[in-house]
Figure 1 (cartoon, rainbow, N blue to C red):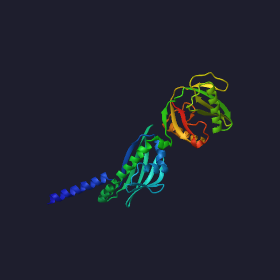
Figure 2 (cartoon, rainbow, N blue to C red):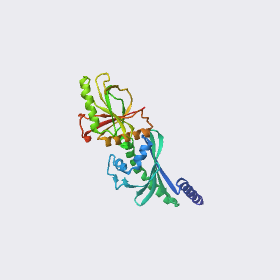
Figure 3 (tube, helix red, strand yellow):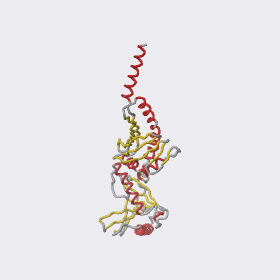
Figure 4 (cartoon, helix red, strand yellow):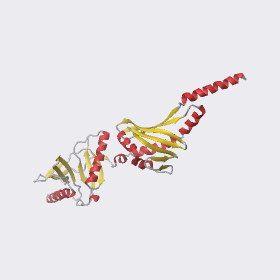
Length: 316
């Protein structure tokens, strides 16, 4: 009888020792996933609650809800954003009557990938039986957090969601161009651009090299605050000689990062800044100033809401 009593005591001691060794007074629940996107873009996406509302409802189901600008629900777990960190966020996770401190951090990997690391603090106390109960309860957070990351991952891996514009790398199809330019004291307007397009169109028609469905391009060079050069070109069928203010140009084959935008100068400038944010994040080298390709079916359109423009940024 005494033998079994001592065996039970030994088992209990081993059990208590194992609980104290394996489950500390405050345990940390850790979950991570790899994101195939640049860390800087992922950080901006993570810290902007406006973006949270977009990706939280990505492929929406009834288990995911957005209560306000900082509180979100997944699988009956409340996620409340409390403060930003250098490369992440602090949150409170509420499950029933239990509240847990948590944080999510972006860990760099390569230029085009990173890891999203969630850490949840689980206070377990000193009572060995409560330790087990509280830790097992906290493990119920894992599926909800994993579901959240499963939504964030595809959203973050789409560059259009991070930069607000679609980006692609490609060449330029037109080889022969005729161009003209003018110097302005103010940023060019649609009137300035289309005036040069009309001049080039008339010249190309006169020389019988005009391409009726060609797309004009233009670029802008700021020499100083009072001197801005506007150069406009249109594609032509074959090489021609320079004549007066009209110059023949042959486009060199190269690589470009391209985005398409609908709108006038303000919208185009905004899209270009987003494109250059991509260059900064991925350490791409801009080889020259950008040019803008007007894609309207009617190149004389003056309503900027109807402008469709491709921005071509030469890239190394």
